[in-house]
Amino acid sequence: MKESLCIRVQRQEGESIRKKLIELCVLNKDLKIRSSGKDLLIPVLTPVEGLGKLEPDLFEALDYESPLSQAPGAYELIGDIAIIDQHEENVMDIANVLLQHKNIKTVFQATSAVSGEYRTRELLFIAGEKKRETIYRENGCRYLLDVTRVYFTPRLSTERMRIAGQVRDGEKVVDMFAGIGPFSILIAKKFPGTHVIAIDKNPVAIRYLRENAKLNKINNIEIKEGDSHEEVAGITDADHIIMNLPHSAIEFIDAALGIIKRGGIIHFYAISHEDDLFAGIFKKIEEHARIAGFKATSLDQKIVRPYAPYQYNVCIDFRVE
Ligand SMILES: C[S@@+](CC[C@H](N)C(=O)[O-])C[C@H]1O[C@@H](n2cnc3c(N)ncnc32)[C@H](O)[C@@H]1O
Image 1: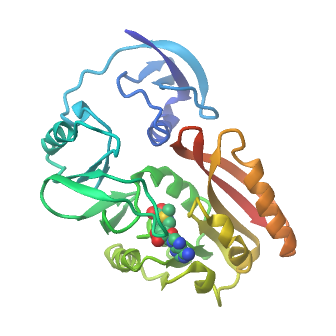
Image 2: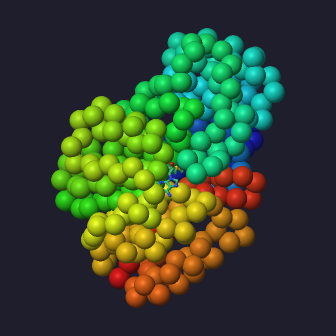
Image 3: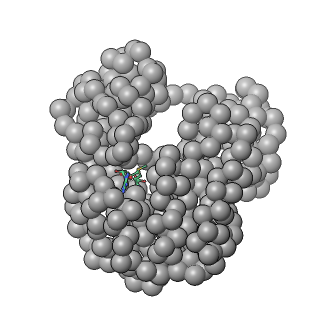
C-alpha cells in the first residue's frame, strides 16, 4: 500500500471527477481508486481545489496489464493517432509500446509547441501507418481531422460538455474560433433547434468543419471562413458566444460585444498566471463592456487545465446587460 493525497467524492460523481482530474493532469494513475463507505477516494498527484475534500490515505498500486499503461512516456491520443510529447527522448521505445495496441495505427512526435495564428504544431512522423487523418469520437460526435494541419486537443472534452450544458434549444450560438467544430457540432447536434454560427480563419479547419457537419448529420450550422473581426458582421442577438482563442481573445471582445443579445452569455478563454487567474482579465472585459455601454456580470470562473508552469488555461462565463 502507498500513501497518497486523495479527493473524497460521492460515488455518483466519481466518473466525471476522474475525467476532470485526467484533464488537469493530476490523477495518480499508478494507484487504484477505492471505496470508503458511500464515497470514492481518488488519488491525486497534487492538491486540487473545488472538486471535493482533500485528505491523505493508503492505496493499492495498479498492476499494469495494458501495453498502453506501460508506455514509458507522455503522449496524447487523437483517434488512432498517438502524438508523443515534444520533450520525450526515448521516442522509439514509446512508439513500439504504443503500436502494440490494436487501436493505435500511427505515431508522431510533436517537435514544436502549438503556435501561430492557426494554433497548429509541427509533428514528426515516427512509426506505423503513414497517414495524417483520423476520426476522433467525443461526447457522441465524430470528428475527421488532419492532426498536422488543424488545432485539436482531446483535453477539452469535459469543457465542451460544460458549455453545451448552458445552451437551451432555440438559441443562437456563435463560435468565433471554431476549428474543426468540437464546440459547434456538439451544441448543434444536442440541440437541433439552435442556430450555430461557426467561424474560423484556417481554410483547412473549415474544410474539416464542413465534413464534420455532414458526418454528424447537422443542418442547423452556418459555417464562415475568415477573420472573426469581419465575419461577425451582420450577426445580431447571439445568446452565447464562445471565444476559444486563449492567447488573444481580448482583441476580439469588441466584435463579440457588438453581436451579443442583452442578457446573452460570453464564454471567454484566456491563459493566466496562478497569481492572478481571473481578476486582471475580468477587469479588462468590464472596461471594454463599459465603453460599449454594457455591464458584464461574471457567472462562472473556471480553471480549464494547466497550460505551463504557473500558467493555466481559464474560462470566464459572463452575462452582458
Ligand atoms: C485554440 S483553437 C480552438 C479551436 C476549437 N474551438 C477547438 O476547441 O478545437 C483557435 C482557432 O481559432 C482560429 N483563429 C485564429 N485567429 C482567428 C481569427 N482572427 N478569426 C477566426 N479564427 C481564428 C484558429 O485557426 C484555430 O482553429
